[in-house]
Image (cartoon, rainbow, N blue to C red; front, top):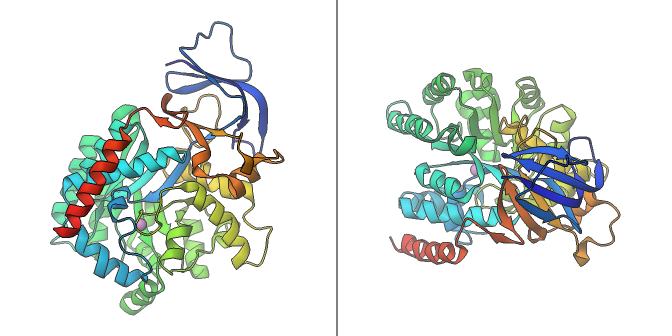
Length: 429
Ligand code: NI
């Protein structure tokens, strides 16, 4: 489809905090074809009025478990281990396909409504999540979460390979399938080795949780006499492109490993705070050249799927914990949510900035809002003042998925009705 966005302000994210004013953007066959002067022979099938709007790259939610929205506001104000082992894991045992499908749809609604155009997910019964991604039009890197040991884990690896064969590269490449060893504390070393072999064979990226809680790190030293990061590095995990969620408790040696192996760190400020896990040393990671992306984590530890909250937290908390208001500037926080996320997912050649030739994953922010006035600095506005509900229009892979806040691909009433029904049944099950 040929789309023309007219007379808009544009934050490209390609060249620091460059803002272009009153420009036109043309989109053809899913890609950005021109910015500025549009050739006379371009005949748009759709024209979007960009006045009073800010165009910027769609946000990348680099770490989540979208089906967990069925647990939203179910288990709160608990510390990490009781939350996980006493509340979440027993209910996860009871999840059925329908719960995963409707939970995924609910999160996708929330993500689209707050400007997320791609996300990286790890969970199970992933066919249901893939179906929701396919139907909704969002972009995703999906992994079948893998936990266990070499004997009991084989069937899950076979499932992950089947899932890869069925979905990887489908929907014009909108869906990618990667490898998801859950964490070193839930996978034996031999099992991680088996997952590495699978990932090498199918050219998958790795998506894993690392050093999320203090207890996890202490247990790792007791069991392996090294940190979770040194442990998986010694197993050879980082020979594959790796997305590592959390990385809250890091030694200087850990940071050196992450930088040296070009591991992408996925920072989840709200989840780490809510579960009392602390806050990752983001400023130090960035200074050491580590690519840091942002994620929401699942809706049961957040409790939303709104990246504007994470962007704001990343901008504020790093200043607070470092007693330094100059660190993690607004533009850095915004990069974490866009181009750095694209790098983490291995998609920076195609998304993450607004440039000619890139895929059209674009959001339009409604700037005619009292809380965004006066218009001194749009970057600061996006980080310190904007809300998810300021997102007006969402374009993914060159298709208009949301316009004037109306999602074209999903019946939201149906989603809310089914989520409520299935969540209640799940608790009773
Ligand atoms: Ni997680």
